[in-house]
View 1 (cartoon, rainbow, N blue to C red):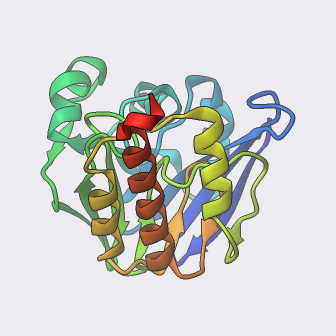
View 2 (cartoon, rainbow, N blue to C red; view 1 turned 180 degrees about the horizontal axis):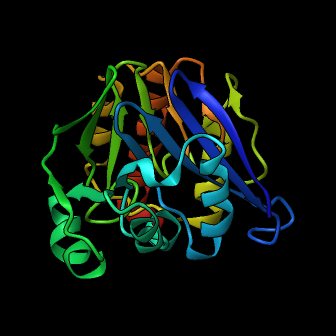
Length: 247
């Protein structure tokens, strides 16, 4: 297993691990993101089994002990399985997540007390980096779901939204909706909450310049239109599921 490191925006690094044995024959990509400021934040901690490779990857960028914050989209093994290993390796690091995630999971699971983030709260990392937390309950899944938006680079780290199969490039400006629709059709991983479309359109109002996907490339095309199109697709799915003819 090889973790590749690429800088996707000024001071934001993608740690990408491709696992061919998950969802064969295409395989599946898992991305974590390191944001550097006066303080460093990692978005997604990764599986426990990924920890040795990811620790070595981060050490090529900075001393692991510098890590100050650990955040993630929702409580799930690929996003926070190795959180306590990171906390042990970085003695000043603190988990940070939304109120629901802290209340139902982190206060028990984490070896260090988490910082509770309200919708819209900002973690000021210094050196111009500001990370805004946005609550997205049940979008795409998980009561505790949320995303983060780095304001200086307009980078939206959107977790499982736009999930796709395969080994993905560092960046991409083509179609990310088609592969996302195909993955949703195959995996049915979303909650289909009635508020999904509205929630995703709310993210488009941030006017991001790039979308940092957890399971896919970093999208550098028209991010606002891509989010609106994804919202439309989930609205379509929800209406179809509610249609009497669908039963």
